Length: 131
Image 1 (cartoon, one colour):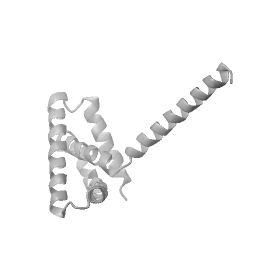
Image 2 (cartoon, one colour; image 1 turned 30 degrees about the vertical axis):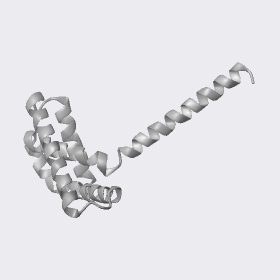
Image 3 (cartoon, helix red, strand yellow; image 1 turned 135 degrees about the horizontal axis):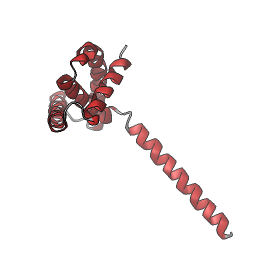
Image 4 (cartoon, one colour; image 1 turned 90 degrees about the vertical axis):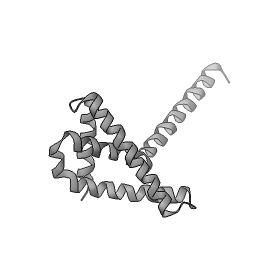
């Protein structure tokens, strides 16, 4: 084999590896464990800063409820020995942590900061996903 062939193989393998990594990251972002904290933060930030979010609250709550159920199932599958009470406790801890994080972020950055506006955009997007 000449050097050109070896370099072509290395580039091809590198490209395929990058594609596999990107695909894996995209799949992770669709899982309830990734989405759940983001939805909680979006809800808290939107409730603090955007009174217009109240009209979307019912629809957003449906999406959050579905995500919570999916996350609950993920936790049960990952650790089948966890009781319902332990899962409820873990969910409560995650809710408290997300609310604290979002509240501190709003207090620190203000409602007009792009990060806070991104929370509200996420809130609107997930409210629209609900049927």
